[in-house]
Image 1: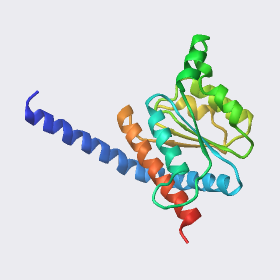
Image 2: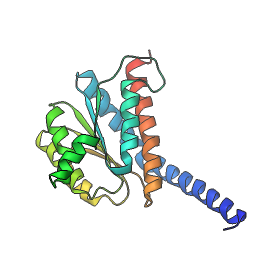
Image 3: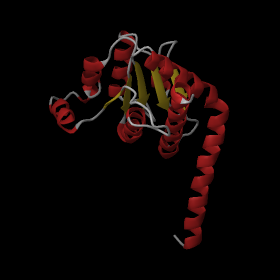
Length: 198
């Protein structure tokens, strides 16, 4: 591949990303505001936000929890947020028992309380562990916010009518994940604005 081909590849990636963001602006802005309202209500009522990222989305889930516990822009008190995911020892134990579909479920069932909100990041949403987590949240009547991609029929079909799906209008997992990060930044900004900008 020569230098011109590499430059074209870089430019095409930027263009693809920008086009995805423009499309998301049109289709997702209302859902993002609605998600921020759900989260602010949860926090004002004294509950916590439980966050889970499947696969490579775990990094974005960690980033969201960090922003809630530490800060996004404003110096402020910590907000109650908890990450569930593939912990090394716990994950190894569950997998050793040949039950990877339980990887999130065990943690969730231990910490979830009425009034909490579950945020689930999953670009594809076909994994059994993800669907098990949604069913567990439904059985506890916890509201769910999902950050997904275009091909998320499995997740959409499992959500309740009060749950919210923020589905990035893209096919490629890389575009989905990078736009999840943008949505996370916007959510954190809206939460801080609602709770702390006086």
